[in-house]
Image 1 (tube, rainbow, N blue to C red):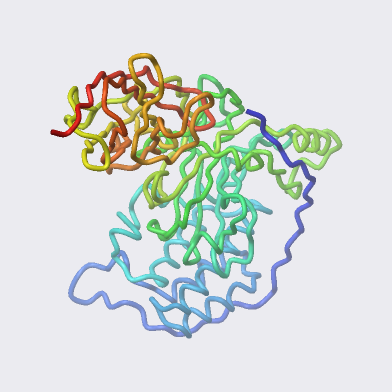
Image 2 (image 1 turned 60 degrees about the vertical axis):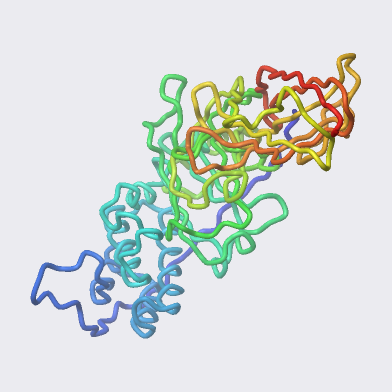
Length: 447
């Protein structure tokens, strides 16, 4: 399968911060009388020193803090102002070395004033959960990523994580983008913070494969229909796919061929010598192979977005029947009067759920002549086969992380006589086909 890369040179604009002085707005803090402090309580007064420390006391961000105070906590106005501050937090981390600890504290303080907490769906285990590692996300030199996207964010560019540990040879690690023809505002109902960081030690190698963790604030952001995630580990083999923790192997998406080849920023604090610039230009013209996946609802995985992503080589598919939902040995009557269920679990050899896989059911008589079948046809018919004799379904989520499902529902045969059913699978646009399952049946006329 060929991949078309778009190559471009992007000079990042240097952003200048406004010089507004910090102001002290008096806001009543949470009362501590009668019990221990509430870990989820909003402290508007506490935002001012955090903003001053993170932005070195010279930032127009203070105006957004004043907007939060005016709007009040847990309001749409507080969310809009909070996301604007987060956008500035991320932008500064991408053009300068920042105090990541203060950035982490500021982000958590903003969340407490933007949303009603506790909320186990939107903010599981907040604020102490390991996923809320905003300090790592703000460490751009070590592959961190921290962006706001969606309605009101003002940008539709790829969310890109790059390893700058060697400023002369930066490596793209992972990226998230809307699918082809879509924008962030069209796939997200509300504005979100998209953040991530590598969970493996950099630099990556064969002995130290890349694993990248992505998440959002809120965690239950509504993706419609999906986002595209790429893991940029340099393996362009046709069996390489992306594994998402707690979900499985995600469907391959060749429409995302440009994510890993996105140019890295050229505006850095160091590394402006002739060799550094020459090496960066060389990398812009030599995009890496990637593994891109559909990530969202429906056939592509769970709807929430708080997982670790890594490459997984898929060389085979395993099919397992569900109960007795297979073609029976004797079928009395033809469709539409007579039908029977056909249902399989689909997984990798290691037991991972496998999205983006077409499972086919074919029928032929004892001489190999195709026999007509009634049922779903969700995938293109393989070359050399007759449409009427080939049924197909895409793997769907079952809620069980050990497998996905290929459920044909009720299947029928269009004529009487002996019939041979074959079931086989194909990973869309990738290698990996299962061994063929075969069933012999006899279709008898209805008396």
